[in-house]
Image (cartoon, rainbow, N blue to C red; front, side):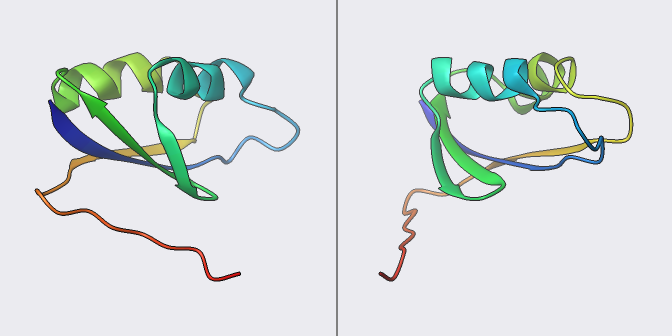
Length: 77
């Protein structure tokens, strides 16, 4: 399975984007920063993009990028 970075910019004020966030959670994605998630999946970038962008509002932005072998992140308490 590949590791993917899913990043977004939500431009539609007042919308909660529940379906978008549910799709990320149901796929097993991990939120690493406020608008960045990591997902392990056998899907291609195009498949992930097409699935997720359908759940966004007009003018929202989405990035799907394959990550390398070693991926780390941290939160300082």
